[in-house]
Amino acid sequence: MNKTNRVKPLFTLLVGVFGIAVTACAAVNEQEAAQLGKELTPVGAERAGNKDGTIPKWEGGLPKGKHKLGDARVDPFAAEKPLYSIDASNVDKYKDKLSAGQIELIKTRKGYRMDIYPTHRSCGYPESVYGQTRINATTAKLTGDGKDNLAQAVGGGFPFAIPKNGAEAVWNHRLRWQGEGRFEYYQTNFINPDGSFYGLAQDQVVMTPFASAKAKSIEDVGGFQMKLLNLATAPASRTGEIILAHYFLSKSNDAWMYFPGQRRVRRLPAFEYDNPIPGYENLETADQYPMFAGALDRYDWKLVGKQEMYVPYNSFKFVAKRKLSEVFEGMYPKRDLMRYELHRVWKVEATVKQGMRHMFAKRTFYIDEDTWMLLAADQYDAQGKLWRVMEGSLYPAVELGACVSQEFMSWDLTVNRYMAENATQESKPTDWLAGQEGRIDAKRFESDELRRAGDR
Image 1 (cartoon, rainbow, N blue to C red):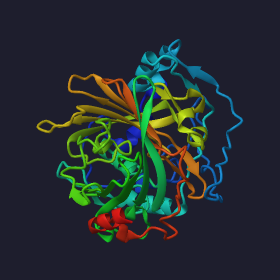
Image 2 (image 1 turned 90 degrees about the vertical axis):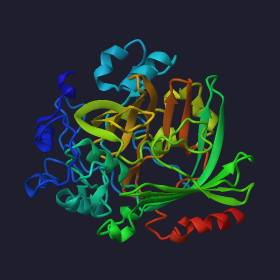
Image 3 (image 1 turned 60 degrees about the horizontal axis):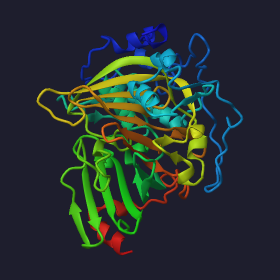
């Protein structure tokens, strides 16, 4: 590993014993927390750029601004051209800044390339998020029972801006701030080896109670992290199916499904770990959505360190409105639409605990330092063979004053297929302010509402 990938001295100071996955039951002290907003950004990233200037200093991100729902998003970097491209002819030159999954896609998918653009640290957050994150720095805790559930934190901020282990870093991803709720409209596309695909169109309401700064404790929101209500709108054979899911901060998820043909609501036996999502052709497990939202108790989580890596960033072109057939061509999205930048990421390795089981025996996560969003993930089978490769997206939603992520891809290397999840390009725009502005009815997320929703 070259010097750009080594653990930074600051990081070594923050984590203490480097490379050892230990469950943290206590937050950092006041001296460490005082670095937030100074040497560190208010959410824990290194404020400074890198030595060679390819990663700039963080200056606060793009400012919050007005955006009318339905208008095209303004891409402030639209005029930029790629600095260079990485493909099969030169991938070895850049391998120290690529994940194993990225290298595999480049080497095995003909024509696959990564266009590298100038780096822009365009992501910031509202002051309320910074304030709540600062409170959490000295108060947030995980359980000490080996399950790595969230034991204590305030809402509306990141719980572990200065993580001491991999589980804390992953909780930052789980609680990444994207507002208090949204209406979103998208299609999940299941792509075949010949490039043809079939889509499942869905309307979804997402409510994130713990994203509110009014949540002074986990108990204030009834232990909920997120609630989602998902309605299938196409094809005709799936229209009317509804999934209601409750994600909790300290216990197993709950989920129900409404079957319009039977006019019945059934509680799903399990909606976490490696249980397949119903109707997703065994291409996605419950804890792969979105990127990762599962319980942590079946893995040992190791915080490997920080490294510089090419990741999807400022994905305005990719998420812009256009026909899905213009986005998904062959065995990967159209390369001209994809933008990659060099950013610092946290690398986390998850290994199944002795006595536990999961179809992915090992997982490697790459989490952006400025947003705590999981932008790349590699999943391995029990023989150590790379199985599924995942890639996210990210762009600033100026009306929210924060970066958001919806679209992500997951390649299953064993069946030579991939899935493009949460594809919004051909759908109505996402209403990122629906939660803050009171357009979401909390009563819709109760199981006894499912049949009434199906009858409407």
